[in-house]
Image (cartoon, rainbow, N blue to C red; front, side):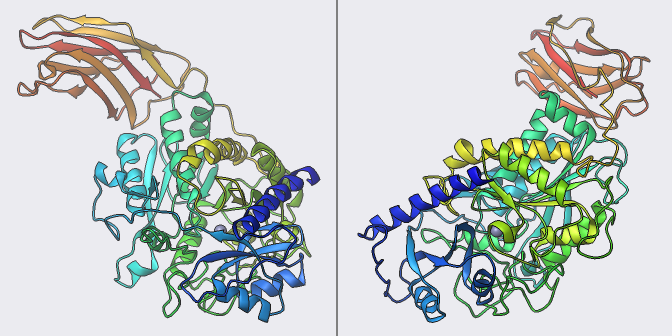
Length: 584
Ligand SMILES: [Zn+2]
């Protein structure tokens, strides 16, 4: 822990030095007082606020306190007037950074499209970050490309949509190797569930991008990567890439002067980035701690606990996905065989947090297991800090992560992804930082979390290993297809897979041919039943077949010899079976 904290402190120190140099002073000297009237530059102020009363006072007064701490200091974002307000409230307020506005172009479209095409997936801002529409188009694309793995779920409407003022659906995707009953919204699911959420705080744009990459990692890894295949054979992975789409819509509209919107869009009368309710201070667990009652403050908790539609929609979804395993007081544990893990991704400060966020006076009844997992996650990330929020950052009640553990007993974590300094630090790192820096750290943390979902507290039954011998089977021996001749076959032998094949079995076919309309393709089951994959179509003059067909094989036993039967029914053009695969 001490070693990890030092790394964080060193990084924050570097920022302080850089900020001071930018303003023409040296660390330790008096920093200039920004006096320009709004809308001037934005600043990050370093504020002396040790853990405890001072930190809570700062939050209670509604300052935009960033999710990062350096020893005795917290950091507050705002314009020149915020520096004056801090000093008037009795806080020290040294300028730590001058925030340079990134250059980005606003996307062309607002609000949800009635339907999506591949073109919508290219709708990005700030060098590649996906808009809400691009993320939603991606979900649809994944579900149609991988019907045996992915299911898109609409779990509610954003505040603006409920007002008939634009807005978005609230969308999740369930990814698993589907068998009957999977991805149903019932808490009695056979498979344990990992739930991963990004952009509850809209401006924390790294988190939506990480969610996007995780979805792709899962669906492309199934059948190709043993670890991912095993996860999806045994676990349901639920991903909400954008939990606050109205807020992200505001962020992405910022053009060359990005709007650092944190909250949802339920509010009016404040500055451009200050309307709305903080969705991570709005739940009924510890409501009121570390939040503000003033509507323009960044930590505004709303008019009542669970007042926001986005909050209630998430709570409704979690109640559908997880049985209630915990009742009683703050220290009552959930049973040791409780299943499931819920991750809420935020940025930044390279921390792993777990309940209680509302207080450090009490530890949860599952503290040892939660703390142990947080330590593992922090280590996988390369030495992040970890602890209850009040141990490493500040107390904050009304969070979704506290609510999940409080109400349901499910193991629940916050990841504060990102450094306070360096070229990839802050709220809005360059898009290239996602590939180079953050995804390589977060991916193994996600894999770890998925494996823990079956038995996070250690008292349950570990999941049975997947039946041996199942997974993806391929025959890549070429078979020539005679021109206008008899059918030819290519076979795959399956053994050791108990039971019938899935209702959505992917059958991947690669055939080289110079006029593919000549070709008819069938899959023949071990019992001789033929499933037509492709008919002839004399007008289709294109080359080659590279298609994954989804076939309902639920009445067929998996074991036995499967054949791909291919016939060229017209003269002149010819080709060969290149390869084909079955994935059970
Ligand atoms: Zn956050």
